[in-house]
Image (cartoon, rainbow, N blue to C red):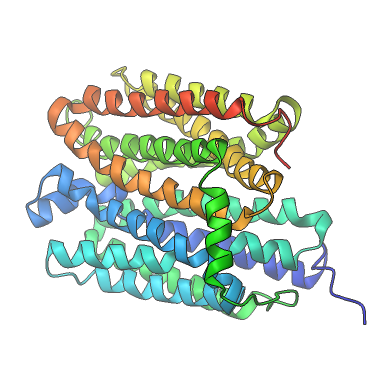
Length: 404
């Protein structure tokens, strides 16, 4: 009996698969980042400080970061599609519930739980693609999924910001929850069920052995830290912008500020460009160059003219996505070269990535209260410089073309 080689481009299964995972990525990251442009509104609504308001985002990223440690082994046991479906439906339902939160503490608790259940998708999607897509089309299909995550992060902020201007923050959060439910229904009906999944018994000893390998390699540890510091800097910058652009001298509405997130479209392009450049020049070189571009964009935002601020945001966004895209491919390649554990290494990278977002993203509120925008830029700049040093450190351990 001939085994299933995977859905090939042009087939109905391939179209359903790529379309479904695009929607899944869109819904997941729209829900995750829904409250970022709403920080000033939440601060006013619940009479809390700027630092406290950032926990509406940090709680969710903290939840997803912690849950990723368990979600990686879980998907190898229970299967790919059940975890994808359960993650989308649960996170969307929680999103609707958040809009009815009577107090701040319950809102933060629900956001943390939403992050936990959202972890099912990023921990599963790439494994599903590797098993169910024809080998010659895996990179293309993965690109569609990554494009969905970038557009989801952008559209979530745009939708929530625009709805807040007209109907308030509760309608914005609840509306995104309904969008997520619609995407979940579409994914449930369209996504082809797994045909090549082979369940693995949950053997704690083997899981711990693989975990030991991915936690003792200096290069991998540096790569994890690059993700945490760089994403922390990125989220801190956008958190600070949510406050900067609604105050002097700009006085933009929440909806207008949300359009700054259109810069994510640049990120969806630079992430692919970074991968192509890494094939030619090596992952370490491209990651370091991208980090330095991120730093340059951050510095440009110190200018006062709005168009220069927006340009700086676009540059730092493009640099960040290029660095993240290449580093996320660098991690499993290094793990395979070091005798396995690629899946757990990728999960560990994402775990540190989101924990960095939660911790450093919240510091943006403190930096804003202490030094306004220059204070935020100082925080972001220090984190980016640390990431650059980590990239230099990792390069000495990894052969120039160890990316595939």
